[in-house]
Image (cartoon, rainbow, N blue to C red; front, side, top):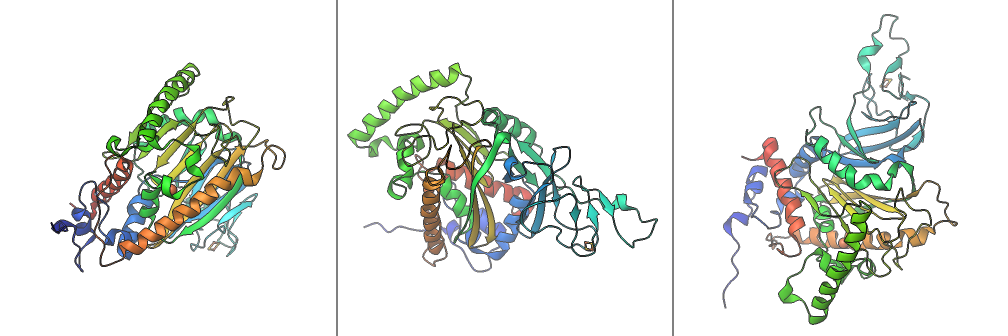
Length: 428
Ligand code: FES
Ligand SMILES: [Fe+2]
């Protein structure tokens, strides 16, 4: 019997640098263990991916009215998102210009001005310093504006970049994403529910897991009712006769549905930007399975009030994946997931369920019906991420190959990650 041999380049030695680990990644394979487990890699990830690149942090519904404040922390950098008195959404480093105190606690609040609790320096919602007691009459307040964070409001999804030199390709990417999301009019939504889950695994395992549905049939019995497995790739040689017939039947359904979507100008084809791009995203409109309306236990719309201009009930699921985000936009509601690393082996996944702002809980939607599928699926995914993290920490771990039928999008994400790290100078 032939012995399986670990390729030499995938073997990790104590003392390997991040550069060594990035170089050791084999094409179309998972990452060397240290890239999932080491503290220095987490610091590098925070610097390169979460500070120098665009990341998704919020939705417009987080700050629906002037004076609304939403604060969160990315790595060691607290930021604050506000809606100013003119209705503009802005982002700042959540750090006082005096001696650096964190201005606002994480979470949501409503304020007239941003007042530092330490010595009461006070800022307008535009970031302008307007009060600095006992600093002298000649004190140049205009020099102490809050430090701005670059922000892009892309059809209601808020992206920020903590660097002073954000990737320029966001202009082009934002325009393409907006073409897909504008129909949902996220500015007219509210957050019906929000839930945090801390996954016991590295953030890249969290991202890899949400990029594929290879695991769905065996791990997500309820979610699997709301989509067609063959939409996520398959090896024709491995399909049963029944599965092959189902795939063929789906092609017919797609032909009809696409004609319908085309007649309404609803874009549906896949757009995929990963390798070779600073800002990574993928989007596509897919048919919803079962009753075809929404990702709910009975696949019926969760909310009676449609989102935006989507009057129809068979508008499918527009998914959006980006650097640290995945999301589903449907005719009646949207679910948006944000991933933020906490430590090398813990990751925050914050999920927001959006419905039309006029929808009333208990009247237009039932919270359990709205949230059940993704609360369940998130827990199932968290268990898979934890299970994988336990394996990648083991002396017995070797990076395995991805399926070229079912995991091409995982390879896209991981390849993009390695390229960004290399481009930032972590390897030649
Ligand atoms: S640190 Fe904020 S007012 Fe002093
Ligand atoms: Fe999953």
